Image (cartoon, rainbow, N blue to C red; front, top):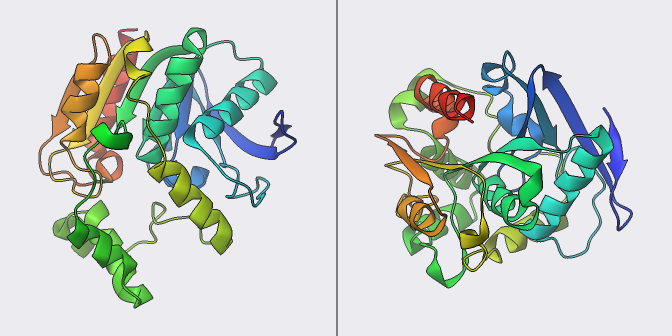
Length: 259
């Protein structure tokens, strides 16, 4: 896989597939590019898809230093520079949506259009998951915590007919310190003041039944980003893009086709 080196000397691995206009796909917290494995080919007839392994994940370096969502955005710019891609569409889900916010706010000429999925503005203005959800993920029984995460990502009907393996539960090869660094990066995200500066055409997508990243964040983002459109997917939980791919994929592609 190709690798680029960022300005602070970190080697970042990235992946390219498909053909057409570039489309950056940004994964969730503590995940590498495999987050997109089950849906990536939905986009590849029309777009050259570009993913990266965040620092701390996959084949990228794993320095034990503070990470930020804004820093992850800078790493993505290093990848685009390495590819000679002046401009790309950007689709970020979960923490990837937080990273995407900084890409669009800090590098407006590099972002053709923006899709923010199951994400939040963060900070004091964002809606946080409730304490019941937090406790379910922090329980000492790792098997029970994993099951709780699965039920936050997917509906019971989906889980009953899709036994896995699942690509959205985190990079299994991450060292523990990198997981903590990712958690801190996502928790520390606050782009509220920057959101009105986003000029790219923007689509907000969220599942109505997402309590992992509460669906109330979608109208917050849509109201804060000038001209943003919002689409809610009824019944979908956090991994709407996978379980409801027959709805979400065409929704995103139609939005991109109009830009």
